[in-house]
Image (tube, rainbow, N blue to C red; front, side, top):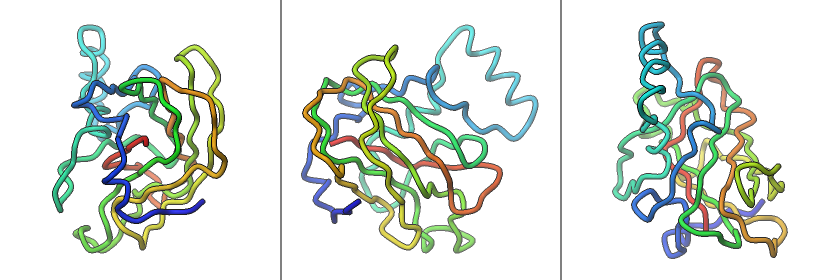
Length: 179
């Protein structure tokens, strides 16, 4: 459960949209919506196109200020990411805004406890790679080293959020990286 400093910026990110990674929205939690109209529009559009909301999670967010987030309803949810290529995973990075960046000084919608699962393909049960805690008083982008080196190669990763820091309505994620 160790955390690294910005060394993650020097590691390849295999969950980056611009390099070909994709969030498999059909295997991920639904995007949080506040009105019945938004929910109905999402349902109708899902017949014709795929959601782009989930993709925000793996877009390049370089720069000091975050550009957007993907939120799902409640404190528990998940996202499955198809990586740019099958890799041996050693670290993951999870991001949310800091308390200083928040207009209210609180980040209750930030993830708290989460687990990572490696998937050989979408049809298989994932292999548990580790459970971690995102520090609400830490940096906006936090990198976690897997507790045990895994020799397996994975083409997909499941990010499972178990709890957040107190928001009953939604949990928001600003970025997710796989190293």
